[in-house]
Length: 451
Image 1 (tube, one colour):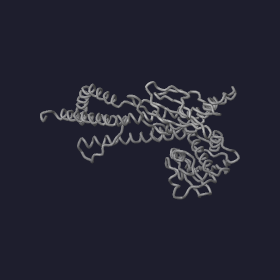
Image 2 (cartoon, one colour):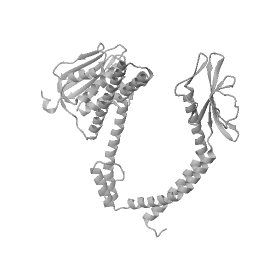
Image 3 (cartoon, helix red, strand yellow):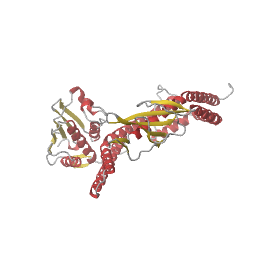
Image 4 (cartoon, helix red, strand yellow):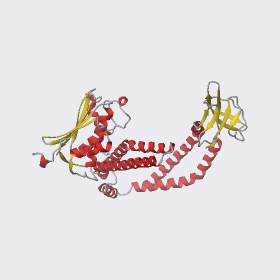
């Protein structure tokens, strides 16, 4: 083997390693197949049986089967017996002949002839002294047959696996030993095209490997940034789309459950359409924010009336007018992205109502100060402890989850991000049990700073 080239020796060792790993994997699969098959069968029996049990009821002493109920599903047969053990409904499988006593809620294995069966019994009471037994029956899996099938498949696939492993190993080795200058040029081209990024982490040096590592590190940094932006997008989307999806789901369930009039049906369709439009707009906004983070898009800046932006944001959400106080002087303008600023306002007001007193108030005020425009949203809610105030801007952070409604903790993180994208920043003033005031500060552009 010493006379073989390095590429060939690497290919041989890789092939032997893959064959060894495949053999160990086969042994492992054979050892656990029985347990896995049994556990899978038990889970399938329990899931199928309980979904059917939920559709069986006793009403005034009579057996009632809901629509969609079937006595045989996914290999599971459902039988209904009287309390004394007389079969009331269902068909016993042909080869199942055992008279196993009932045991409430216990999955067990019984033998009938040469076959094994899985049983699950549940007692459905009717009053204090009567009721029926519901039995789910499923044929237990044959682990021996599965083992034989695995061995047959392994013996058939092994030659093809050996050929593929040898070819793949040699191809990988040959590719790994391409001239260093060629690899570095390719990596640099990928880096300039913003397709990939990565890190090698080799110590600094002047040889080819060090220069190649430096090039790859630049690409890896870009890739990390892209992945982080993608994760943030997914988290933000799941948080922001939860409400419209819930509304659509509730409307559909109501329409399916009740016989609506034509007018009600049209209202339901209109509601679903409004929420779908809202979801589309939310997705567009989140995509825009992700592109802004990655530097692939820019803010859609325009001159905006701050008071009008706030009023439009409030009108979209339909906040309670008797609890919302707007203090918006006329003539306050700023350069900003209307959609993102509306999202900032809605997140702040939504947080204020969510964590305020049940019948408390929310105040929204705007002002022009020396060199900046400010927008403040104040509530009379639970407040935030001083040691927690810097952390509220972090993604997924919640001060006291036990006191807050369900949420992913992304609203204030999104607010801070929108503020940064506009060249501004957020501040917080809060007193526990008194209330909180969130303020958006937007410094004037340099040309206007002196006015």
